[in-house]
Length: 70
Image 1: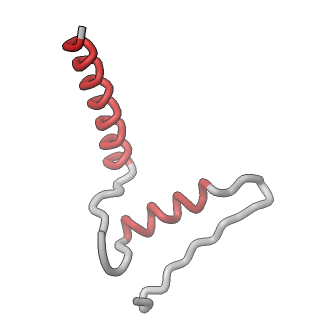
Image 2: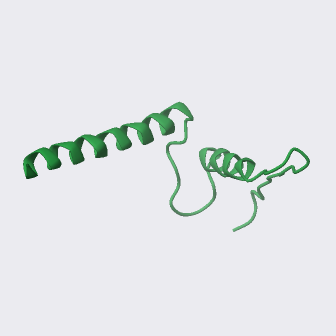
């Protein structure tokens, strides 16, 4: 029984990981920077995240990045 539960858990983790990898590859969100200035992939991701926060048709989110800011 424990072996069956472990097998189901492994399958579920594999499915979630595959879904995450598929989303990152389809949206071209890789590579991401960990430190320093935001790369174009980072900016695209942050713009998409800001757009998801629009709750109504009247609400518009505008995102800009300062290239010289550190």
